[in-house]
Length: 458
Ligand code: SF4
Ligand code: SF4
Image (cartoon, rainbow, N blue to C red; front, side):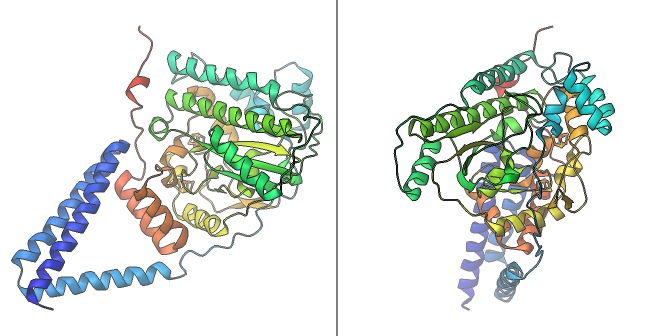
């Protein structure tokens, strides 16, 4: 190669390198990621070395550097396509229906001395001591909780009140006249309608028996009554939780954001269900504290995401930073398919990452591989210790969600990394190393937006 071209090539590489990391530093500044800004700026400065090398080093050394860069690129490309980190998904479909009375949130509502309390702990004495201990803590949104903040707790309570008001209209009789469309057209219309109302991603699945709780544990209806749901399809959707607010986990802003997005999911679900009933179809919205279905399981089967180590839904573009809403119906719909490549990528990444497990303040997240639960391979957190912590701090914590590498914002930089993560086991290992480098193994809690930095005057 002409000696001048080795200089141009090194300058080009230097500019590309510095430009890339400079732009990443700017994006990280906007995201409030101070450590990532420092690391990216240091790497951007490294591009200056290449610029200097292009002007100062002898031609033979410049050619050698270019050869080294080319070889590194070729090795990286070859490793990208090697079958590293292949995992067998195995069976991840539960073999039986789950009783909602056993869900932590349902157990927490049992009042000592009531018939339901006596009945439940007669059947499950193994839960009694732990649940009584949880009930003895200050409680979610309690002014006595460790992270109590009257302003943000009032905001969260307001959202929960609105969601509760929506409980009255999750269901109803369909209109006598039924409007018909082909399944394809009906599916496309309902997905667009859900997005129009505020949903982010929308998917459809056939409603399967294991999606439906076996007995009522919360919400309207008789506690312990068997659940029958004669619907054939479920439309599931996500709403996004604010990245900047979630960075403040486990402090008070997080519960305000969770409650807001529960309300958002409930509002969208109630509207979609009402629209379906106006078209003459049976439809029920499944919203916070008033579910008949296991919403994350429905959302997974509708192709919206997969379960990771935190045992909650991880979506391709927001990770776990979402809330899920579901509408079940007898309208004819076309189901979506799960993305099994993404499923395998999540399992492999969670096998090596463990950031949530290391950061969890109560060690509620397992460090072990997936285990069989009800016949399905999955990770399962310890809901008792997790929920007890919520009742100590007064918020729903969310620390695991905020540190997860999948939870970064939906931007070109992060999506490029997500693209590589879903396609290459080698890249997943590089991406994890980069995540630790840019954000830290245990990312610190960040300050919430300025308007949320409010507290009671002494
Ligand atoms: S933090 Fe890591 S291990 Fe935990 S869910 Fe996210 S990717 Fe998986
Ligand atoms: S919400 Fe908090 S306590 Fe619960 S598993 Fe996540 S990090 Fe742990």
